Length: 76
Image (cartoon, rainbow, N blue to C red; front, side):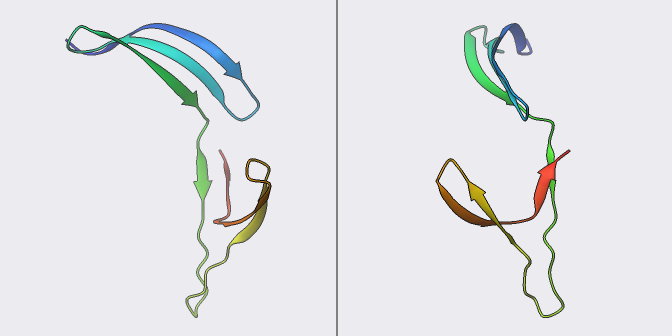
């Protein structure tokens, strides 16, 4: 018996992602609940210079109240 979704509850709808709580019937017959983040996807590019250096961007991240160096990326 394959798994099947029994229900879905929207917990949050945002500009970048949505969060749902889903109940599934598992292949063994039991029910299980999952929190699922739905995101449109993203893409990243890691520029490498001829001498082997990498290009990163410095980005402020409110969750840590600090800057991080990251691979250039964005949403699809």
